[in-house]
Length: 109
Image 1 (spheres, rainbow, N blue to C red):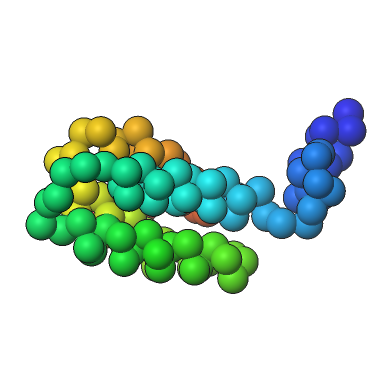
Image 2: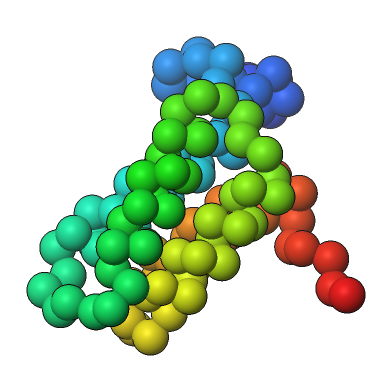
């Protein structure tokens, strides 16, 4: 029961923080992808774009509740930049899932 009360209040059981759990999850996912990208030995043409957008995502989550359209735009840029690097696909999927927590998948047009 304590866990459900803490979850509804937006607090984590360990820290009692008032941080939005979606923001915490996105911060963790972005951090993981940044680490994996930094450790990836291969160079590819759009690596700089991916690094810049991940830095922008990190800055957005550092300020609190980010704007969903901006999150989705950053995700598209990162995915386009590293899309063919299969070693990074799990971490990229984690970032995508964390962004979807802010409003679900983008509407289809």
